[in-house]
Amino acid sequence: MKKYIIIGVVVLIIFGLWFVLNKKEEKNIIPLVNNQSEIMNATLHTNKGDITIEFFDKQAPNTVANFLKLAKEGFYDGVKFHRVIKGFMIQGGDPLSKDDSKIDSWGTGGPGYQFADEIDPSSDLYKTGYVKGIVAMANSGPNTNGSQFFIMTANYPLPPLYTIFGKVASGQDVVDKIASVPTLEPGILDRPITAIVLKNISLK
Image (cartoon, rainbow, N blue to C red; front, side, top):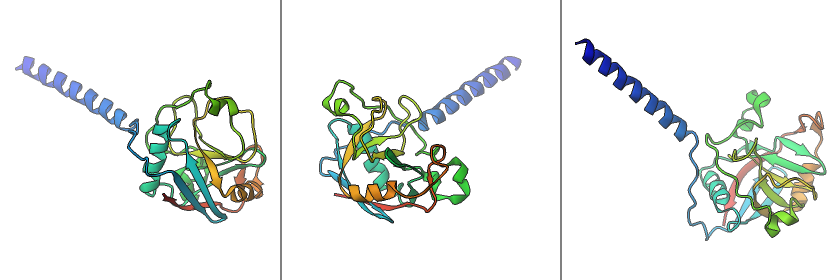
């Protein structure tokens, strides 16, 4: 009898470990590349105007697929550009920024998974680098992409650590308008005093 109890406990432990590992894997789902060839652009409708992005799906197919997936799901609807650094870039895509009660956590949110970088430092794209109008993924280290992205407002010599997946095709004037808004604690928070909201995204 004691033998069967021990076996039962072992089985429960093994099952518990499997469940924990399985749940961990679910949190780190890597988006699959889908055939999105019919979608070339995304228009970000903000409360300051429209910004149209042209995708670099050949250079960053997984990143583009992830952005399109989230856009189609309405994930980005209502997020704010929570970080604005004049002469550098504007950053958004954090779902936590939809909730003003979570303001202290803005900049830390994501879709619940992370995926790998798509960076080739030897390519022409990265040799040109992070110039005005480039759209790239924000991250907290290698292979930690999620939903946050930034748009360059000036040429800046960033190292090739951020996956570039598009550029502004039209609406750079809107980007510049956002980049010029007053911010709280410039150089530290860089948070717009007046909310800059990404209302929704249309794809075509």
